[in-house]
Image 1: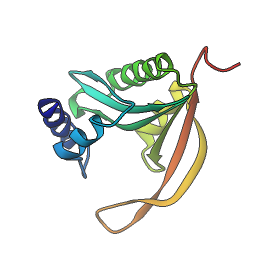
Image 2: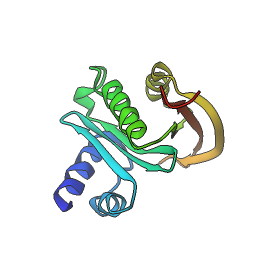
Image 3: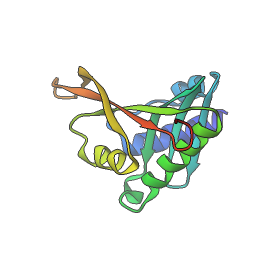
Amino acid sequence: MIETAARLAALHAEAFDAPWDAAAFESLMGQGGVHLVETPGGFILMRTVADEAEILTFAVRPAARRCGVGADLVARGAAEAAARGATRLFLEVADDNEAARALYARAGFEEAGRRPRYYARADGSRRDALLLALNLPGRLP
């Protein structure tokens, strides 16, 4: 698990200005219900509890963006969550992250809530987090 955590932290650092370290990944992966879907171009780390799943973090290497890697990971993550019994999949995204919001909209996610001023930026500004939800196919009436 230590090697996996280090690999995820390195990829996360490529994708984010405020990346998670290996200790954070190791801690999360040791918790119940947490599962990983990974490709050479990125990964999605999720937690499924009862009939709900949440994307904890999702990263795509900059060189692999706009090549379908993100869409593939979201689809595979949703399928894995459904296989684990989830009927809904949730995530949070910054309201100004247009590329991610477009990806999630194409996947069928809809806004389910908002957390005002949730994300702190390096310049001291804050952005709202949008809570998005996806009903997983074949799981809801």
